Amino acid sequence: MSATISLIFIGVAVLFIIGIKFLSSPKTARIGNLVAAAGMLIALFALHTPDGISVWTAGWTLNYTLITIGIVIGLVIGAIGAYSVKMTAMPQMVALFNGLGGGAAALVASLEFLRGVQGRNTVTAFITVPMLFATLIGSLSFSGSIIAYLKLQGKFEKPITFPGQNILNGFILLLILALCGWLAFNATIPVAATGFIVMFSLALFFGIAMVMPIGGADMPVVISLLNSFTGLAVAADGFAINNTAMVVAGTLVGSSGTLLTLLMCKAMNRPVTNVLFGAFGSAGGSKAVAGAVAGTVKPVQADEAALLLAYAQRVVVVPGYGMAVAQAQHQVRELSDELGKHGVEVQFAIHPVAGRMPGHMNVLLAEANVPYDQLVEMDQINPSMDRVDVCLVIGANDVVNPAAREEKSSPIYGMPIIEADRCKSTIVMKRSMAAGFAGIENHLFYKDNTRMLFGDAKNSLQALITAVKEN
Image (cartoon, rainbow, N blue to C red; front, top):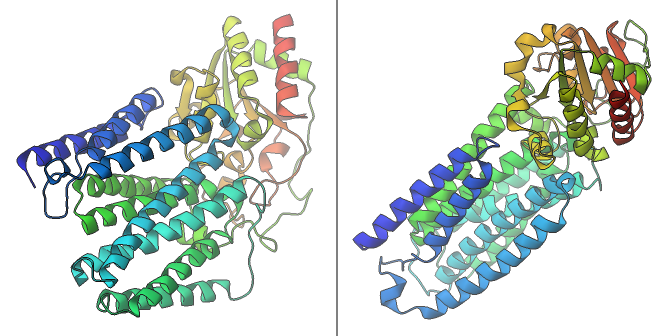
């Protein structure tokens, strides 16, 4: 590889790292996307042949024609998606785009492997292993992401399980690994193509079988994990075709996705294995009997709740998936602005796994132009919750359930929550008393300092806004 190409790839790697760093904050996320995209564009036009000769000197102009066509098609599809998909449907789009990335990585590795089978390039075990790894992980990510997309669309949100499912999945995985082991050392024989197609098909099926038992509310973890799979597949492709930029980009995505997955599992006090194999939330799981929690439910009307909010000094809003479903983020921001005019300090407490994708609540609130400095993470706001006058819970359930702290027999016991029950007054906005994803009663609803404001979140918020303006 020429010194110029090496320097370009070092610069590309730096841009990728800066882009990932900027993505860690809502304030700089847009810039981070642009920086990383610029790095990828530079990498595309710094491609080199397997022997290290730049395509500029090799004269592969056809490659650039295809690359340009691909970029234009991708830009058009991305722009249409960005402008037409509602923010509430962003988790679905993220899952779908991630799946396409995994599928693309699998196709690249597959084509390279089949070229070797046909004798069109030299294939050794050192090169074959990353090809097979990229095919396995990429195809798994593709099919798994499609199922995640369908779950987020509400096609089959509940876990789909049957007796012996994990044993069957384990057997399929062992068969896939056995085929990969055999193909690694027999890639040049004609029958290897058939074995490869069987392995590819099993990997696609395994992705479906892996995600189907997982409940819809665990999708933030699943999306993050599948995203890391896509990154690892891209990195393996980079090793197979000798592309440094792909190795760097894939490794960054794979490692950051893995860390995010582990952090979210920690936020739920559950290991990754429990998310993937536990079918949490399925029928037959632990479910509290309605009315078994001590205390009574105390409904409140919008005008009464507005009085509490308007005359408070400090209000904390806890958004949840119910806010996303009601598409009420703009009303939340309007209520926050009105309270600010009354001299009320308003903050938003963000739970790491609230919603249906990593950072779901941050994305929705940012789309509604809620100031970034009002968004506070769970660990930062919990120590001061006892000094909050009113906590307004909008469509959140399990992430504010004190059973995680009080009930050792609860399936969510030990899960870190936003401690809304410690506030002086708590108003919970909810359609009904229906249980959350964990299928258990929420102890918060029965606390002496809790009032329930029933109804659609958007309509209830509009009523609150009107009442606050009148005070």
